[in-house]
Amino acid sequence: MKPTIFITGASSGIGQATALYFAAKEWNVVATMRQPEKQNVLKNSDQILVLPLDVEKPDTFAEIIDTAIAKFGKIDVLFNNAGYGQHGLFEATTAEQIQRQFSINLFGTMEITRALLPHFRKQKSGNIITVTSGVGRVTVPLVSVYAASKFALEGFLESLSFELGAQNIKVKIIEPGSINTNFEQTTKANFASDESLTDYKDYLQKMDEVFKGIYSGATASVDDVAATIFKAATDETDTLRYIIGTDLQPLIDIRNGGTDENYMNTLKGIFG
Image 1 (cartoon, rainbow, N blue to C red):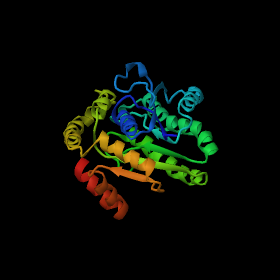
Image 2 (tube, one colour):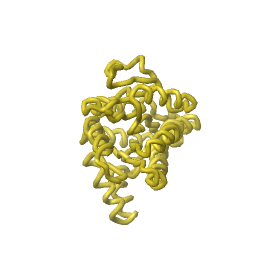
Image 3 (cartoon, one colour):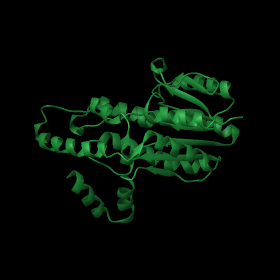
Image 4 (cartoon, rainbow, N blue to C red):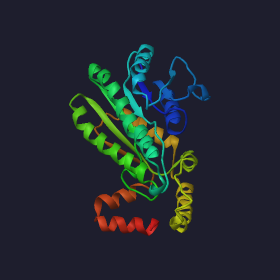
């Protein structure tokens, strides 16, 4: 029986690229997304099952998982990819925007993971792979709420890895740096701003130029991420974190290997 991966947020970007990559490797793929009717790349076939799933609606998960298992017999890997980035000034970010950020990035991931655990325990194996972000380890300005959700995910998954290890279920974290996706455009559309906060005007203009340079210098593609996810699914190791992109590793090395003062001074040199 072919192995099966269950993907959330498969409509575009990393999720869609991962679905195509695993299908090319002869895996069965359950590609879930909020609006499958808008999907024009992934199609239902003997190997790919496209299903509607909104991670903010956990009461629908059991039926969707049962449908996937009925199609392919089992699920071997859960790939938590659904999420979005709430960027902008914290002072301009509303309580509703903060709640939605955590509802999707953290609570949605927790609930779909919880929903699949009984299946993994029953078959005495499974692999939970989750995309966090470089800003789940190294923060930058104007992403305080997004970074908070990713830091929370990192803590949740690291702790979870110990208790699920006792059940022969692996936990893997994917940490992309700057990636060539439509993420920049998406976050700009969600950018929290307030024209009355004029004190930040000069800083926002400066950061706009800094981030243009970061995005234009992206060192990895969605296909690179998909290949790393496949490695995490198949390498049979207990490796917890997989870092993607040459821009991220040096900053993590500074954080892990030096003093907090040196780490903060390095980032202030870029964003101060």
